[in-house]
Image 1 (tube, one colour):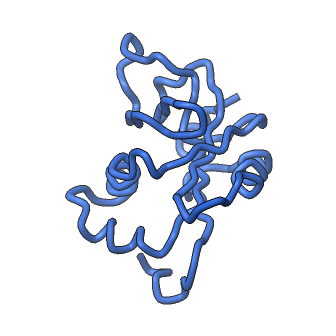
Image 2 (cartoon, helix red, strand yellow):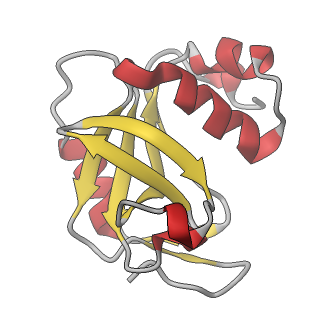
Image 3 (cartoon, helix red, strand yellow):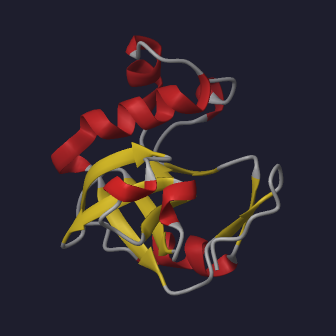
Length: 135
């Protein structure tokens, strides 16, 4: 929210608690930009239940679940922590009923048909807080 006054168009956001692989950023930047829809970089991970899981329908993001129980997970894709967003995200975050990172997840869930995926062929990212890797 602190950056809002400095933003005048689309911008890229990286999760602050991750070391992001360059492939995730490249995937996002190379995604077709036919609209100003938000784009989320996603990466495959064998233990996706430890992360925010992402279901895909082609290039559209479907359900996003924050660390779901392992027995419910039906996807290997996770949120890679890299996003291309527009200025409207700030109004949406203010209106969200959650706070912090959960507000971002809540807003992205609301975008439904508008949120597109940029699959990364890289190894994803590593959590600075847990040391776990999305490789």
